[in-house]
Each structure stands twice: as C-alpha cells, then as structure tokens.
Image: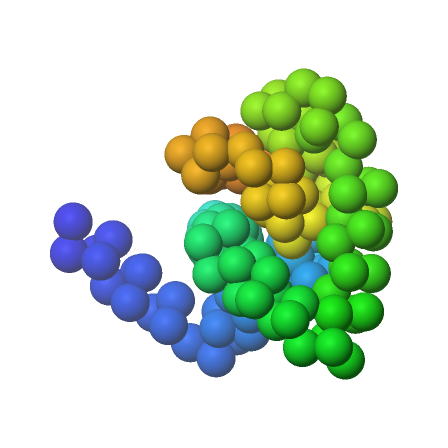
Length: 160
C-alpha cells in the first residue's frame, strides 16, 4: 500500500501535470495526452492513462456544472453573445446522435476519439439538451473510459 501511495505521489511531477492539462484542453483532450505521454515522453502507460482519464472526466463535469451556465450568462453581453451563439450552434449541429438516443448517444459521441467529438462538445451538448447531470456524468465517465482504451490501444500498438 505504501509503495502504491508513493508511486502516485510521484505523479505530481511536471510531465504528468502537462499531461493532465493537455487532457483537459479542448480539441486535444486525451486523444493527444495519452500518445504524448506514452510515445513522446516515454512515461509509465498506467500513470499516463490514469492522469489523462482523470483530467478528461474533471473537465467534463466542470463544463456541465460551471462553464456552460457561465456561458449562458455571458450571452447577455452583446459582443460575447455572437461568439457563444456560434459555439452553441456548432455544438448542437455536431450532437444529433446525442439528441436522438440521449445517454448512449452521449457515451458513443465521447467514446469515439475523432475530431470534434469528445468531452468538451459532448458535455456542452448534454447541457444544451438538458440531459440530467447524473446521467450526463455517468455517460461522460463511460465515454472517457472507452475513448482512453481505444487511444491507449492504438498508442501501444505503435511501439516497436
């Protein structure tokens, strides 16, 4: 137990903080943080995946609970309204599968690691489609686990 605890204390290292931040960033998310940590930084696969999954889940929850409602409030500012409306329209256009099959649509949307899918768009879409938070968070967790498994498999497969 002590060794396991010491191992995870060592994760609080600048390389793992970089991976954590990359996994939380829009567009890159864990689609980039996992290959970056495994293939470029040559870090421990399990630690990279753990940190990436954690960061991706946390940002999904923050989007649903904090960022999306703040964006909704900022729509009242004329200049920001156009930008936020563009983001909301783009998100809703990308989220047709989520709208049709709600929970499983959100899981699939987040779980398939393609451009313009993922936690940022999926979480914002779940907020805009008024999917309950508990359902959204569960779908986010499942989607992130699926996506991280796919990305990890691909990353590990490329190691010679």
